[in-house]
Length: 354
Image (cartoon, rainbow, N blue to C red; front, side):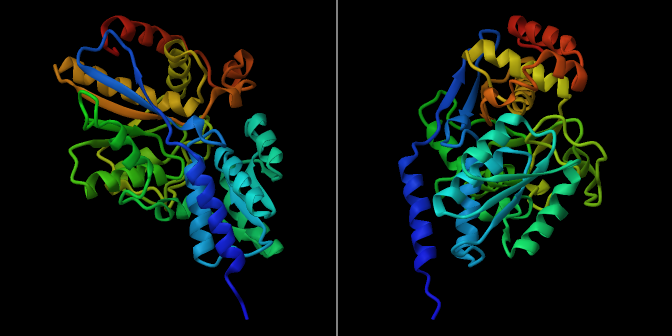
């Protein structure tokens, strides 16, 4: 007779870990050039595994356990650009399960080291488009479970408000001078977080709008405007953790109010600009998020509007010391930041981005 004892114990371990974790902070930026416009950063880098993906990994494990897809000793395989794999390796170790991350060879070394720290193994492919088929192949060969974040991210999280990130944002905003933000800005990796936030906004009947910002080498922006699910991109995203070469099943365009395409150099320049404001490093996807926020803030300022905008710190910059914080790597892979450094310096003075 098959019992659910191990599954019940596994769920209890994950839930206990959740109870030990405090909600992440909401940081208010001080930008004197903005008149009546408040910008907030929800700091997801303070999760036990250091990124926004900790929430996703927890939800994916619970979803797979409750569906009966994971049992005792089931090998876990995931396709990832790094952060989700770090978080899933953490939960796999907690449950005593083997874990293999299938990822592009260019993934930041620090992320690889963290996956291995939690007992996971890394399986590298040459291009980000190869991670899907290789993960499916490994799962079949090992009789394992392919977690498939890109398909299940949007359905594994309870978007109605059961301690999800959207619910946390609005709870933390209640005592601010603009308690209902005008905008929440988010960049897509799987699309799961933007789906959760957008659905929550609609379910709660809120006036907040959702803006999704996409890096250069990604199909989400073009899909949003064309509704063509067959779109692909030959180049992999240069902003690690966000942007995809294909339209992922978890990206739900219908919950998005506006999309912007952010130049990769602008993402990195804004990442550096933020360090001077908060005194610590963040990852490049945070720069993408914040550049989109500054565009919206500048537009609100020009129109004389007041209000609040919220975005996320996705992960810490220490993961990228050998890449986005390395001058030679930047010159070889991103190019000059000067245009956007000048633009951001102007924003400091005027609150405008020209």
